[in-house]
Length: 101
Image 1 (cartoon, rainbow, N blue to C red):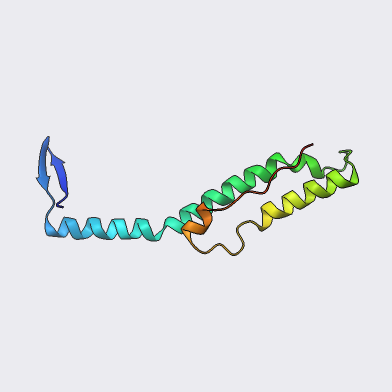
Image 2 (cartoon, rainbow, N blue to C red):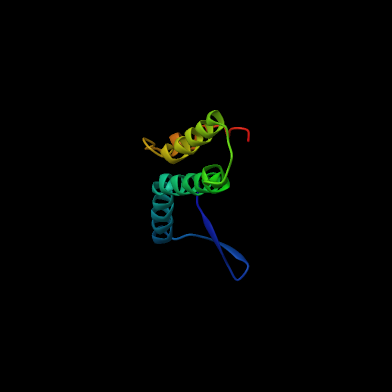
């Protein structure tokens, strides 16, 4: 299916050179899918870590069991991107469950 562009309000088919350039752009975008997904995952992971920073402050009084739950949760978050090699794997990540306070 031919692609088109708009020039002065008129739809014009792309030239062969423009088609090739567009194909290259689309291939480059597809090749970067993993990098974009892993960056999104790390951003979300960092937000979750920041939201749980309170749990490791020295003046927070948690039971030993709760302290362990929070530390395990934070470790699971930090370890999360390890071993992910494809965009599909990143999109299928199951986030660790945040412990109750």
